[in-house]
Image 1: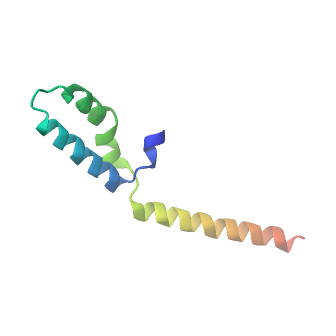
Image 2: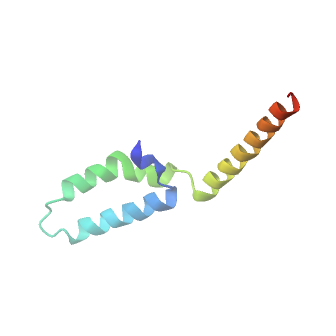
Image 3: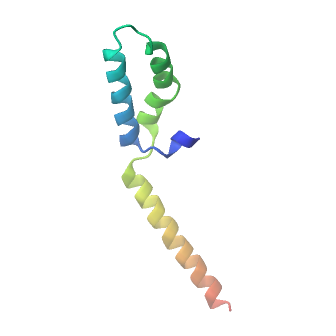
Length: 77
């Protein structure tokens, strides 16, 4: 859950970093853990996470909705 805050671009950057770490791990000490992280979370997140634009659109729509909702409460007072 804590890692779900990363956008698609951020997740893609993390995938690139993890693949880099694999490539320089000459002894293969961390390869298994890195591959597990990629397979179990980061590859999917890099493909399916929302983009920053989608998040910004969502937040804008939510703000507009809350303003309209608040305005309707003010009209009933």
